[in-house]
Image (cartoon, rainbow over all chains, first blue to last red; front, side, top):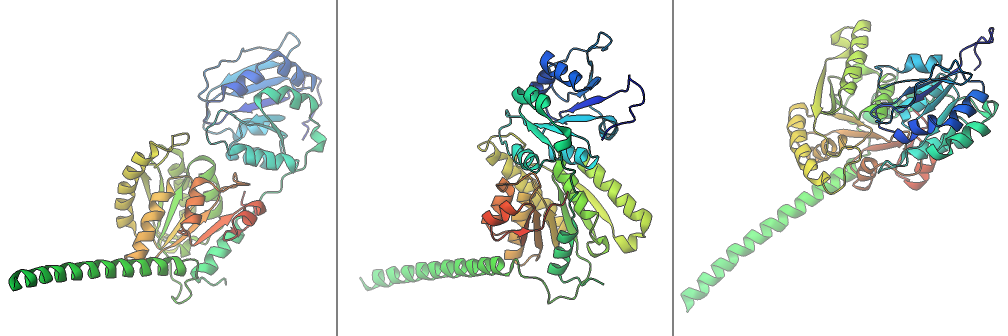
Length: 178
Length: 234
């Protein structure tokens, strides 16, 4: 999962995404001094935050004073490019961004939004964390998760397969497979 | 006295016939309902396989991604014409379905892959909406869904939640009960559901409306034995 680290100044980006939701407590948690320092200590040089409909504006930083650089934007039609260029992804618990990130085999921290009314999203994140495909955190535990995380402990995710369902439907409807 | 008596009896008789008729109709309706529930989940072997008109309900976000992922491995020449329905508040899903349909047309002719139509529908419940206000919005959604279903009358329904698919499935069930159109309803529970079914999944499971309800985690299969465990789709 490492990039070509040929120069000392190699760029290691942390991409933070909240999807189409409003998840200020995550953006706020990333913007705290302790989280930014923990990321910098781990060797990351840039934080890029996709903040969605949130109202909390993180503090921009060029990062030339020996700290991590911080930038943000609200939406993008496709986050695929940002995911591809990231060295670490911190995401909300939506299944879309989770699987998109896992398929790209990027280290992932999923942060569960506890303010959602129907909070089923933690189920998926916790199950995948148990299987060591990602790390699962809450906004208030993000710092601990980053400090304690060991990327080598992660297990690559094997993408699932939809053909059993398609075959089941075919058989049910009486379509015979050639 | 006699006159009054006979009048009383004739009125009584009329009432009697009325009540008998009502009970009879009700019984027949119930028998038909039970037949539909029983016949559901039985494969349609009797009919020779021909292409089936198919309704695909796109649920937005991760739901749409999962549905398109399933469609990508299905033999689309067996499921035509295809009707895509998405929530009126969801602009992305139908666009993604169009991309899929365009890619099909690049590979084969319309005669092979069939035509497709794209429609929007009012949602019965938005994410985060309270269960109380969702009663009113459900009624509106039902009326609109009925209109669309009369136009489409699909033979196969593919859905994976959230609430968008419920009015359509309920109407499809009544179409079956009234003999308007027999359809097979397939519900694939989202991969995000590991321990409990979603509200939509639970409704279709408990009311026995889905012909097949697929789950992607073994924990769900052990909790809901009538579901079919098919492993992860994503």
